[in-house]
Each structure stands twice: as C-alpha cells, then as structure tokens.
Image (cartoon, rainbow over all chains, first blue to last red; front, side, top):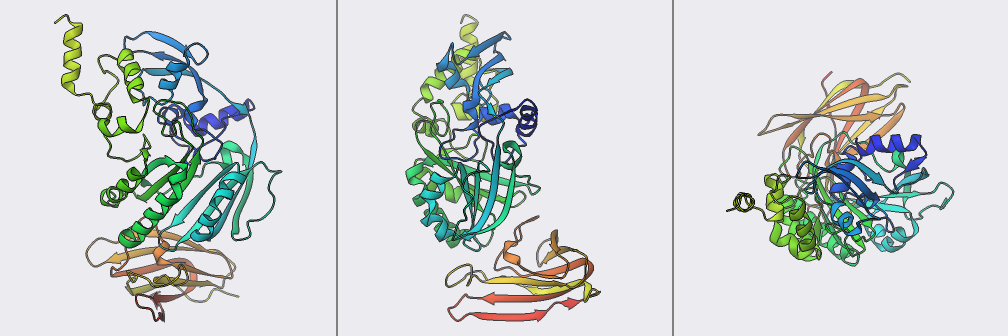
Length: 325
Length: 124
C-alpha cells in the first residue's frame, strides 16, 4: 500500500498521519523503514507513527512487537530498511483527519533566508525551494484553514488550496529526477545552504536547472533516524533523471558532511558503514538488534551489506559457526 | 480577435550565455520566448530543442492562455531535461493554433547589459 493509498483509506475512517512527504507514491512501510519525512519544525518523521507490528523473522516465525511492551525494539525497528524481518501488519499512531490550507509563494532567496526563522516557527508546515538559475525562491506553507489568513508581504501568493492533509501535503510529479538529501543539525542549515548555493552558482549552473529543497524535522529517538537526537533541517539536490548526476552530487556531498549531515536512507549517497557509524550514536545498538534478529544476514542484499559492513565471508563464518565448526 | 501568427516557428541561433553579472533574477543572462496568443482558445505549445552534437530533446510542453502573452526563460525549462547554458542549440516551436513568437537574449557576461531581440522564423 502506498502512502497515497494509505492516506485515502485512513480518511474514509476519519484518520490521518500527522504528516505526509512531498512525494506519496512510495509504499507506506518503505517510507517508514527509511525515515522518510515531510516538513514541519515540530513534526517528527513518518517512522515515528509506527507503534507496533506483526512480522516474519529470519527463522520464518510470525512474531509481534509493540512500543508498550518493547520500546527499545521499536526504536530499532522504525528505521530498519527491512533488515529485521518482513512486516506483515503495522499499528500506527494517528490523528483525527484534518484539513490544511496550502499556499505557495514566490520571492527572492535573500528574502526567504532573512525571514527563515519566523517562517519555520509560524507555519505548521513550511519548506522552500531555491532555483539556481534565477536565485528566486518558492515558499510553501500549510496551516489549519482558520489560521494565519494574512499575507507574506515580501512574497507573491501563486497558489491557494484547502483540502484534506493527505491531498494537499504531497504534490503529483510527472518529471522523473535523481535526488541526494542530507539531514543536518538545524543550526547548521542556513550556512550549509549558503555554501551549496555559492558552489552551484560557481560550478553547476551550466548543467543544473533543478531546484534545491530545504525542509525541517523535529528530533526523535529512533536509532537510525536521520533526525535522531537533534532538531533537523534537510537539504536536497535534484537533477533530471537521464542527465549525469554523479559529478554534481559528488561535489556537493562533502559540504553536507562537513556540517554533520546524515544521508536519507532512500536517496543517493556514497557513505559506508565506517562513515555511518560515526553519525549515529545508536549505530552499535542497532547492529546488535539486527544481528540478533538475522544472524545469517538473509535480509541483506549487496547494497545493505555495504551499509552495515557485512561481507559474504562474514555470513559464511556465521553459517559455519551455526553448523558447529 | 482571430488568431494571429503561425503554428510553427524556428529559432536556429539559441545560446544561453554561461555567466551573469549583477543582481538576479533581473540581471541573469537568459534566452527567452515571448509568445502571444490573440485567440479565444488556449494555445498548447510543444518545443523541441536541437543540438550540434546530440539528438533532439523534447517536447517541452507549454500553454498560453487565451488573449494573453507569456514570457518564458529557456533557462528555466526542465521538462523533460534541463537545457545546458553556454551551448549552441536551436528551438522548433509548434502550436495547435496560430501564435506570434519573439525571441530575446539578455547577456550580462560583462557589466554593460546587452539585449538582442528578433522574431522567430515563421515556418508554417
């Protein structure tokens, strides 16, 4: 079931998730398992809605967990990239269905940055795009329909729409793109963005016309959540699918890393286990849970082996040990 | 007013200057299309971009409301692919109804701003 389908199904019974990302075509469990998020200074990522699940573990057993009975397991499982088992049913923390007024505004990026703190604080959901070939910016705000009817004096409103949260938080996109996104400590966001802006204008405007997106997330305590333990902003780069993206992303990625960035688990990045261990205070705790749940690494593909520092010889060793050698 | 213009226009000399001087977006170097639709019907435009060293890319879809003019910077077109700066290209503009197409270039690579204007070639 996709995030979009889940939103429609929940609405029919009067419920909603607290937030939805900009894109809603991925599966709901995939979004949860990768720490996918929307935007909102006081809103945690989608993974935090998970409060229980039924799953098939590596032994083929059907087991159930809940936050009430085993909160530490849930803190590991919420963002686990499918490595702990196959979720067959999930229990979610939800809200009564609610409506939001979505507005989009155009202004100059300098105005956006000058008012960034108030924009983040005064809107339930807020993010902005920066257009590298014009230095213009698009602000997007979502608020309860009866709140904040006032204008933004330094921006022109170009879209005004009210609807159920699952309808107006995401946006349908027809053009395919590649993306790199990093989650940064909130206080580092503006400086990191400015450094990226400068670099893109100096080196990448010839090829890059797609916008850069700046969003916010509240902290959480999920072991592998990119927002673990810190108020967070995310900055994402986009490039047309079909155009070479590697050089562009590779040039910007060190800037993200210099500001303590943690990569989005579902988007482009080049980090491996040795890099990731330094970014996540609960990395070893997660690995302990993962190895307990799946000692033979049957839930790891080649990509996940790299992320978690597991080689095929490690698996052989484990198998041999289990075989009594 | 009835539709004025043609349904196919050609700009053979596209080349977005690679750098800019001054405050943006006012002084950003750009190539721009100005499309006039005098009819009572929405103009559905498709742009195909030709290059000197690769196959054409397109169509880039664009709509112009009835009895309106629309200015579109080539720099900003990303669907289906961003058009590279500082690269020779040509554009073929096809419309479902007659329109008028003006092509303009703002070049701020040096501090004295330069602007060039020309009507596109009306092919049909």
